[in-house]
Image 1: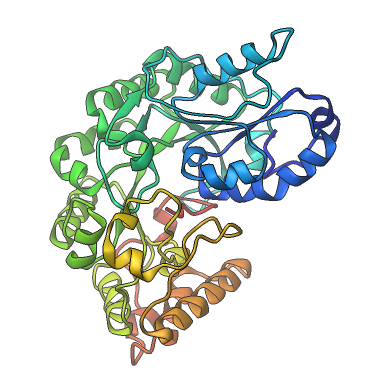
Image 2: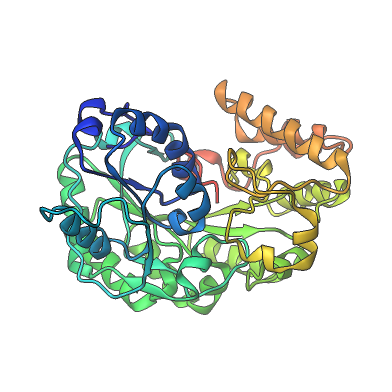
Length: 419
């Protein structure tokens, strides 16, 4: 059951002996926090399990919520093993606490999506001003080679990644295309962790379904290291590449251990534009190191790079999230900055030294949400944020100018990528 789309199935919850919650991201963990009390009320004797990337990161919180088994990393085999142990007649294992993070290589099975809401219930793809396209989702790999300090993948995978066998990925896509998928989002933290593996899959995808498009997420440094593969992505139906740029300041990029500089981002932007592959950049513009002047500079740089139409408005408001287990907590300056862990928000709260920066972030976030609700254009929203930030006179190009790349030509998903 997907609790982001459907209500909790009371009957199934009351009857189950094992109830396992999948926590692949922060939002899912917040959904768990809202659902678990009701689940325990319906079925106080069920064995509760939490699995997925955010499960081991939130061990203390999950234990307080009554979760007995916590599984991270490559979770399928440990989850099957748990179910088998609980199925034994004596059920001696029931209720025993266990935390397991497995990075064992697995032979995967194609996901069984029967019973989930239809693909039409999820994000759609908008492209060329046409009707929304149905989107499917799959993963060609998990984990990541890199150790960005703010990333939740790193504490679990520790710089390692695991591939999903190509035949499994393609069968997963095949089943989704059969029920209407016209576009596939690859959810890999970095599609080019294994570039040969990735290219094998998208070439096979394009051979079998030449009309099906896709998008991927790739680090800036990998876009530069494998620049020769960008044309292959374009030729096989890739509509855009998402990259977590995070900041346009080299000092902040170094603190986050992102592995690229501002100049390298600009180079990657030039390379992707040269092959006609839009780069959907994501940012964390509000960090403990943000000042009013640096935020204004950030907006000015986006304008100068002609990125106003390519950056989802929510990216102008994102604030650094420090979850349990974050490598950022290894830095003394961060430990001194954060407050006690907030079990409701599932993160460590922090405040900017300049309270006006925090006030600006809240104002930008409120405005972006209102603008998205009423369907405002990206340029209109950016102009309003420019004025909120006190950047001075509104540039003519934000009023009457025409961007080099029109928004209608930039494909995007109707639910923005928040990381």
